[in-house]
Image (tube, rainbow, N blue to C red; front, side, top):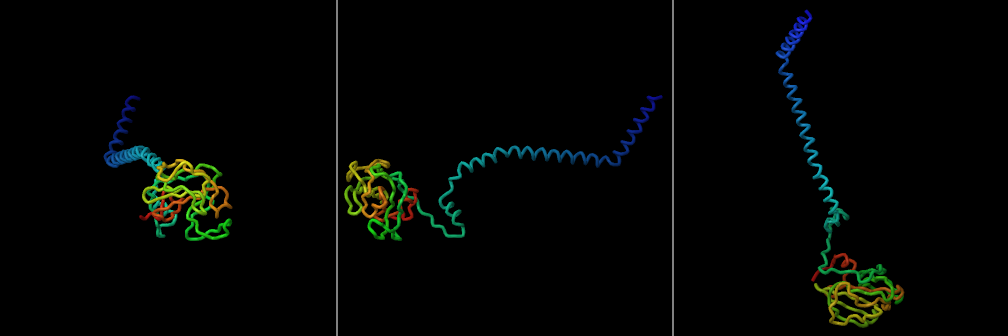
Length: 235
């Protein structure tokens, strides 16, 4: 008797399910299909996102490694503003190094005279003065050939070296210059003299090297040349 009731209930439930499927079966199947599509899309999106992660990291590392690769023109535009006209100096064709390790105590100035207390006069300064100890070694700023060694009036004992591309360097106020003579080839960094305080108009500054750079006989700012820039880079 109980078994018969169980089967009657099962038959009744199946009939209700069958009637429901006849009326709403399409919508049930449609809902299942939509659910499958949504789940597939979510899974695919997550897979693609995870696959892109290594590429993003690599790009960030690349940018960090090249953060100094910005060109001089781009750097000047960024600092001055794109709306302003930008004049980009040309690169100096010769590699120059600082002849002594001292700091700059007097800067290059050919447009505005500077005051020199020892001479009690105002005059232009066609080089820079690099503070150093008396007798410290003075090194060739770049490879070249010694043009002259000797006394140069108020500038004291001097050495001049010629380089390629019309450049020459001038080392003044030296204490000694016994390592080289005119016509000798020199390499960049080679000791050519020793520092002193022989420039008469600059004696109040103490021991230092008066250093000049010229191109085709025209003085250029040595600090710009050290940086690989020459605003007067014209032949």
